[in-house]
Length: 84
Ligand SMILES: [Fe+2]
Image (cartoon, rainbow, N blue to C red):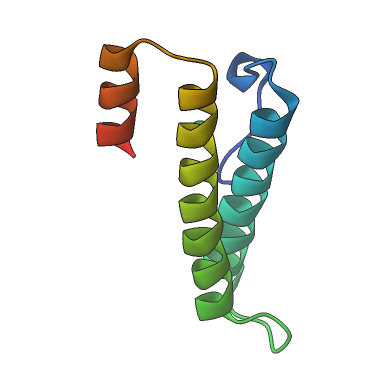
């Protein structure tokens, strides 16, 4: 069973961001599956966690860069960065 089910409600309409969010969901689900189903010999829990952390850092930086590029209002940008 998937820990996180992708929904159309998460779609931003910005392909680059939507693709990254989908990748994050995949990693969360991969982590959830091996946590629930147990660790198989071919999958390492720490490797997936590292990939999830690194991809999240990459995504946050990319998202913040785009927000600057698209001149998102300062208060929205500041609040979003604080959430990251
Ligand atoms: Fe995001």
